[in-house]
Length: 205
Image (cartoon, rainbow, N blue to C red; front, side, top):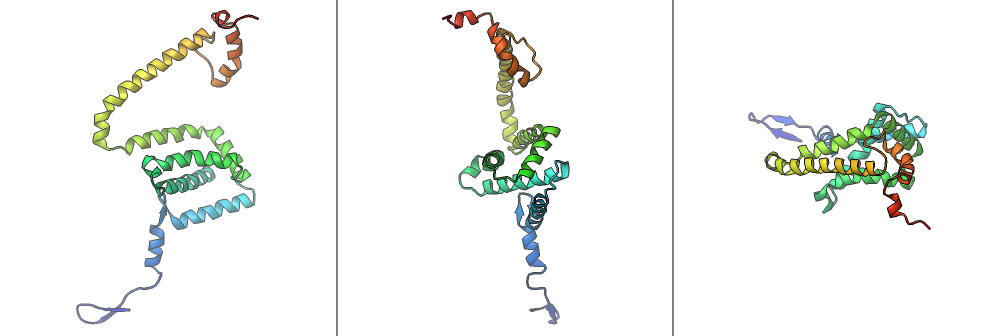
C-alpha cells in the first residue's frame, strides 16, 4: 500500500500483523499484565509443575499468586451484575479455596503455596492490601466527608469488642491475656470447668 505525501511522491506504510497487530496484542491485558506475558508465565509454571520443581520461594509464589489473582479479577470484572459489587475480590478469595477443596490445583503448587503463606505471613499483607486498596479506590470527596461517620463507629465498636471479649474471657477463667487462639482452644474446656457460674448453668444429674 502506498500513500501520497505533500509532494505527490509515493510512500510505503507498514501493513499486516507487524508491528501494529503485535501492539494490539500487547495492549490486551489480564489485570495489568500484557496478554503475551501472562501466557508465557502460565507456560513456565506448567513446566515447573511438570518437572516437580515448584519452590515456595518469593519469585515463584508471586508469579503463581499474580496469575491466579489477575485471572479471577478479570473474570469478575466481566461478570454482569456481580462486577458492580466487587466480584474480582470475591472470586480471588473464594475460587482458590474451592479449587483446593475439590483438588483441582496441582499438588506441587498447593504444597508450595501453603509453605509460602505459613513461612512469610503473606495473608497479613494480602488482607492489608485489600483494605487499603478498597479505601484508595473510593472517591476522595466522599472519603473525606464520610470519614468522621465511619471512624467513630469503628473506634467505638473496637473498644466495645475488646471490653466484651475481655469480660467473657475473664468470666471463663482465661484472664485478660492469652498467647494465641490455639492455646485458647486448648485451655477453654478446663477454664469452663472452673468457671464460677458453671454450677448455675449446668444442672447436676
